[in-house]
Length: 188
Image (cartoon, rainbow, N blue to C red; front, top):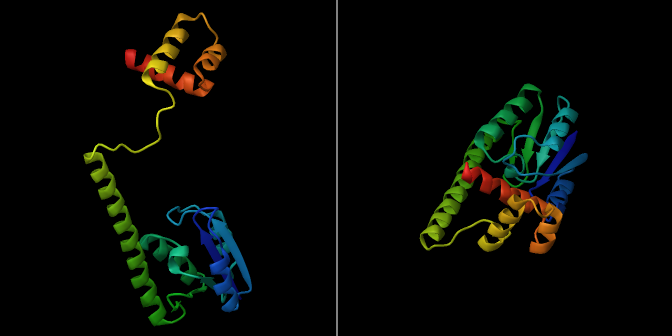
């Protein structure tokens, strides 16, 4: 039995391309998952592996749909091999039921990990370059320093309720408590 596994990283992405390719390859069943390939814990992949029986074939559109690190891919390959389950990656043409397919599985996995590491390096270099130009990343602060000081002053005076402070300054309760907590930590 050929069991397909399709994965996308975000809900905005579509399974259509993967499903079409898997459909043309003659799969029996396709399980779909929305999860990052870098995460080790992927419930649908685990369920797919539980579903497979000796003699079955796990089919994916591309190898990176299964995992992003060579270690992760090799561990999965060993699991499949020990359970006598084949693996087929459609784009790369890898069929691990053959010696050549096993070799290409390892080589392609190494390239997938290299690509991921290169992306990580480029991202870090871009962030460092932006910092040198004075750009700071991250989410903007919820309130400006003056509003922050006023919120802390009103809170410490204990003359107003937290709700009235929040309404007056136009901030959320959680934001108020978070800023007050950071102020009291700095003072101690």
